Image (cartoon, rainbow, N blue to C red):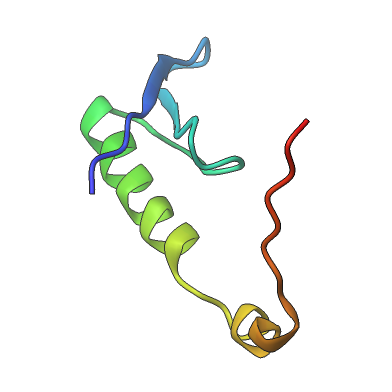
Length: 67
């Protein structure tokens, strides 16, 4: 899977990085390489299912609306 990330220099030094297609998936690092490594870990955790998600599967319905 390929995802685009946005890497920004922080005013205080280091970098902030986020994934526009994954709301709330954000990380940072002192170097560019560290920030990219940290966002990889954040993406893996973001994509990992949690117990609450699996418990609700029988109660979940996806509906497409046309506006």
